[in-house]
Length: 264
Image (cartoon, rainbow, N blue to C red; front, side, top):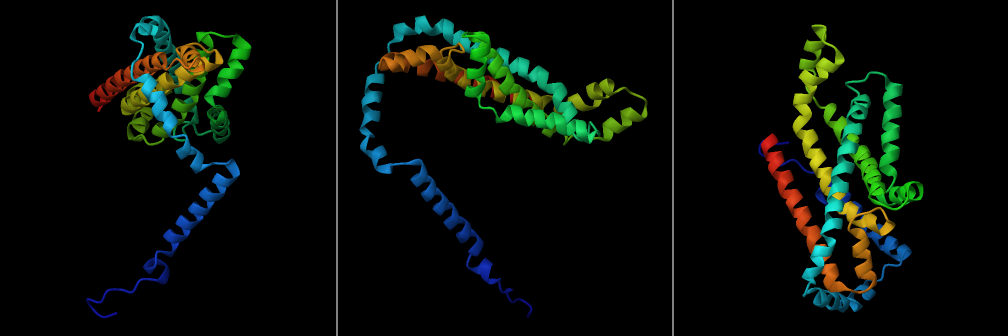
């Protein structure tokens, strides 16, 4: 090749063969998935005017109804906070046991990871239905459901973080004869505290949204009122519930962003 001459690209790079092939395969998969699941795009556009009908009825929220739902709205928030806190506390030791740079026992580590993977595969609604059958209807069932979800999620995120820590301080402390607990407190926790709090707050945001749906299954919270208003086509009251949930999520999101910035 002469100096200054642009090297000739292979045929597959010149005509973007890989990219075009992947795009075509994805389009074919989407098409056949729509056929198998019975997705009807025409029906979507034909019923699009119903969105306008529902929204027009929500334009005038029944604000006095807000006083009636404040108790269950607070209950929803309490469920999310309790479930997230319990799940996070239980997740911490399991995350340490699942981290490959902390625990060298491969079999024990794989067993812990298998348990965490099994918990993560169970949908929240399935857990709620199961716990309603065991513990009955009420907010305690919602707390247990959210705790299980939080445990699986935070443990996974946390042991991923643990595997990225700087092991230099850990080895230095272990060389001086420090115990494992002392090593964790002095060398590991300062490295991961900020990320752990970030994951905790992120899970809390998810649980506030999830706890509204759990009421449909009798697991407490404002979801029961949401179901009642929708079943009765009482959209002005539905609008109040949706706006109240939206406001709570916005407040939690603002607090989470503030705490994350302070921890950085």
